Image 1: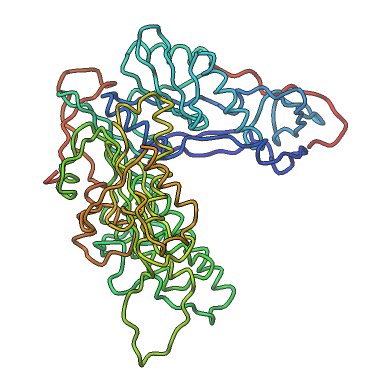
Image 2 (image 1 turned 180 degrees about the horizontal axis):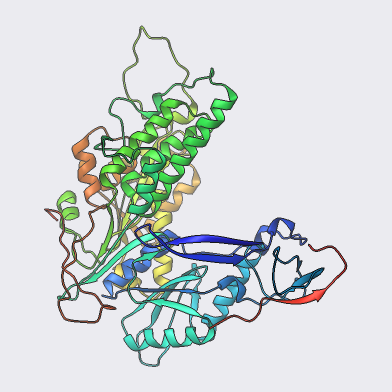
Amino acid sequence: MAISKIKHDNQGNPDRAKYCIVALGNLDPHQWNSSDCFAPVLSSLELGILMAIATQLRCLPKSGDVSQAFVQSTLPSDEKYIVKPPKGCPITPKNTYLLLKKTLYGLRRSPRHCYETFKKTLLSMDLKPLPNAPCIFTGTLLKGEAPIYIGIFVDDFIYFSTSSAVKEQFKQQLGDTFKTDFHDNVTHFLGLNFQCTKDKDGHVDIFINQQVDAEELMEKANLHHASTQTAKTPYRSGHPVDTIPYDDTISPADRNEFNHTLQEYTGSLNWLSRQTRPDLATIPNIISQYNTKATPAHINAAKYAIRYLKGTSQKGILFSSRSNHRLNSFLQFPLDPSKLTPACDANWGPQDASTPNPDATPIELDLFKSRSIAGFLIWLGGPVHWQSKRQSYAARSSTEAEIGATDDCTKALQHIRNILLDLDLLHLFSEGPITIYNNNAAALQWSHNMTTKGLKHIQLRENALRESVQSGVIEVEHIGGKTNPSDIFTKEDRDVQHFTDCRDTMVVDPPSLSINIDNKPCSEPTAQILRPSGFCEPAAPFTMTSQTSRGV
């Protein structure tokens, strides 16, 4: 069958129409398992690492996409597909079916073949994937020149190098293999809006936001009208989500409708929070617990977060080679923008910490509501990775909750460290053990092997934290609770000023662009960043074959 899709620009406006011939994958006669079909893609964490590296190397990233990527791969001889042509196809006679030579959109293994073809091409250019990040490739194209760094997501890719000759060589070699569109100015990539600027002093800033996605969510929730009042935080003061009672009088039809609506809202909020809005990370984490038992009150809680989004839709994250003065002020000590800096925290016990009313009817508390919410922030020239997550067990003490948070942060940090080691860049971003900041003194002591018998019950996986300390990979140091930016990931913060101060350390407004300072071509734009105060055509994909058998 043939399908069409409208492609949009970075402002959400219709840009062009795209038509594809698609096979019905649900009629695939082959019995594939998940490993046969798996194709890796560039994660948001890996994209963040690349942007952090680009700023520290003072590089402006560029992007591109391979045209008709899924028909670039030749099907193996043992993988045959006979398909019926689209209805009304002018080039196929009647009673004729098509024997595919190349992959098509819709086939279950097309993504895998696409990745393998792209990988084979890059390997032929002496560019190798990282062992810990198979969608990041690096290597030297020209002897004596700097390496190039590439991240791929199916048919889209982003790349940078300190050598202009290497970038041109990459464009030439890839363009000789595939019909490829190259974009010197990265304005949007994977649905994210980019503003990449280079100042006259050589500093690079990369601002990323999702204003279009935010505005679409507001319209979906019917909160896009000018009369809609905005909210100062995503949380309703005095009304924690966990205190909303379950309503068993709702009919099955209404329940399905409420569940569907809440799932739409939490899914959209989660998408924003995982990409460019760390200030939104906590609320979808809490509300999603009720995706299958939603009530109108839960939907209103999600809408309140969207009202907060209405007033902050333009905000995003900034990677910069400069020092972040607002973060330094919040932490109350200077931070080197080129060094890995993680912080973690946990809020012990339930979100509802109010004193029970002795005259009120006792209510049953779901077990999961007693579990702590933990989170972390890892900084590398910008917020490269963050997490807000309700723990999978009830911590018996605040120390146990904090140890779990520190362990989660350590695991994420080790993954980032391994990627930097694969790139041979760890020495640029870390000197010796990486310091994790935590505001619980007992957890800090525990990580250094000073503990009591009262903590013997802690699961063995947390002992990996001690091993990381003893092996010199990390060290844990104390930070004040009020100056710990990861506190924003642990609760529904009722303190508007504290929430705002935490948010502004990691989420900023878009930069204001100025004129081209050095009169350089537009492919290398320069700008002054104004911060807030304080701060080739593919071969035919098939052959025609006359068959009397029924098409698949």
